[in-house]
Structure formats: structure tokens, C-alpha cells
Length: 106
Ligand code: FES
Image: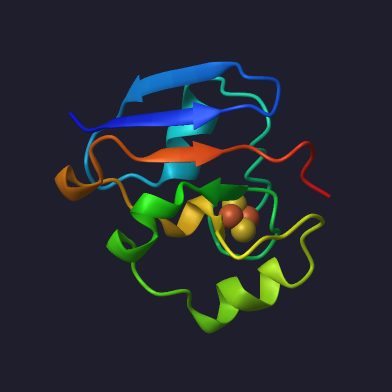
């Protein structure tokens, strides 16, 4: 299974094996990774799954859709590498993906 790494701002790292097809948000919520709330269940409607994608992985992800871009425009501390974790689908191509967790999801 692909390994996804979640990195908290304080340096705490979570490396989790996730099945292909689920979202990076669902993987975090199901494994108790703090800092990803996923309040809307992955409908791209809450913005509480904001993550920072390690720059070396950005071009391996699908392009940001209109709904995702809209939600990210409301995210505190958005950066050029901000994405919504519910819009990132785990696949073998993303084995080793590293995402950073923001200080908060508001
Ligand atoms: S879980 Fe709500 S936007 Fe991602």
C-alpha cells in the first residue's frame, strides 16, 4: 500500500500505509492524525482538510479544481502549495507523498 506522510508544524510525523482510492483526508481521519478535520466528509465544501503538499509532489497531483480553489481562497495561511486533502486520491504514483498540516483548520 502507498505510504503517506503527514507532518505537523511541531515536527511530529505520521507515516501511514493507505489503500489506493481513498483520499488523503480520509486516511488521516481514519487513523487519528490530528489537524485534519474533514467536516464535510470530502465534498470539497468545508476547507477543513487543508494541507501543504511537499513541492516535489505538486506536479504529480491532479490540477486544482474550481471548487477546491474556491475553498482554499478562504483558508487561513494558504500557500502556493496548499491543497485540500479530500481532493487527493491515494495511488501507487503517490507512494511517499508528504503533506504538511497547518496550525489550524479555520
Ligand atoms: S473534507 Fe471538506 S473540503 Fe475537504
